[in-house]
Length: 246
Picture (spheres, rainbow, N blue to C red):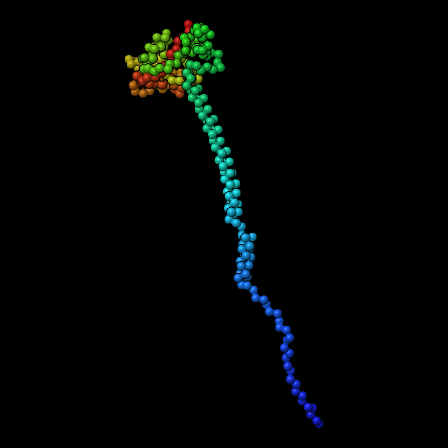
């Protein structure tokens, strides 16, 4: 059996006829500036400016501040209105209280104001003296000056009257309509120790709220709380005179 012959061949690599195109060289300085421009543009597009952000915050602050200002102004006007109303009411009350008590009159035909006893010519034509109050056939005078019990009794006598004698509960109810106080014609006699009126009549114990206690308190005064109340005779008080119409 015969062996086939071995043939050896040499392989040669063919060189390319043309070389691959080379990448052109770029200017590094131009690339870096271009990249910086891109980065700056990105920042400029995506990052809001400080003025815009401040402007937004200012708008929010302005809106909240305006609301607070409006609320404060409204409350201020409301408080001023309340103060003005309170001031007007206070002035009216003071003027009402400062009026003389004898000028007050009520819806009662038995009470006549002293102003009704004077005609247009200024002539006094009523049954009571000027500045006196007429009630149920008696004239009453409420003094503005003060004095002791003895001085007050003498002042009433000079006007043809005497210190008030409280005879019954109806008179107490009449006096209660007025906010007043003053001497009345009741005192304790030192000899007998009994309480007597200026007409020498005894005190009747049918009156309510009679307080006649206290050392050295031998005279009586009228108050809206206690119609008969013991007081020191040397105290200086206003007084109430009464004149009976015949």
